[in-house]
Length: 75
Image (tube, rainbow, N blue to C red; front, side, top):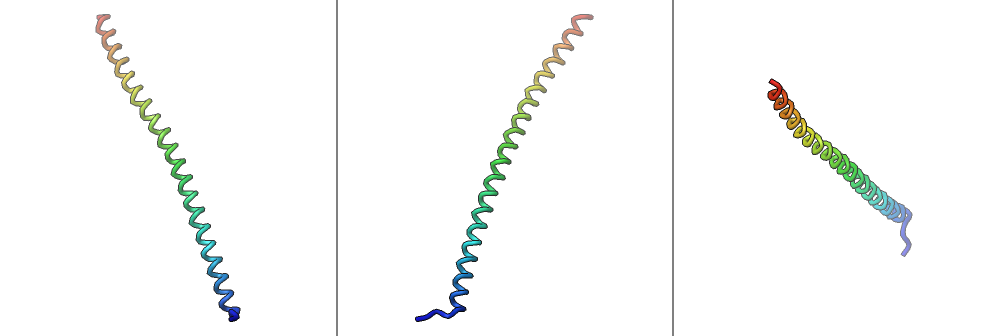
């Protein structure tokens, strides 16, 4: 049985389209994974800044309290 040219072209087109779609999905998944990884790094860095800010605010309150006590002792 000989396949007609139209069927051969259709099968080649189907294989090409399927392969192209698969490559596109894999590339998109890899890019999404990379972007998520970069966002996780940014969030981790941001959380570190928040923690340091919280600690500094606590130290500032202690320093302000000490200054108020020192001013009260001078009077």
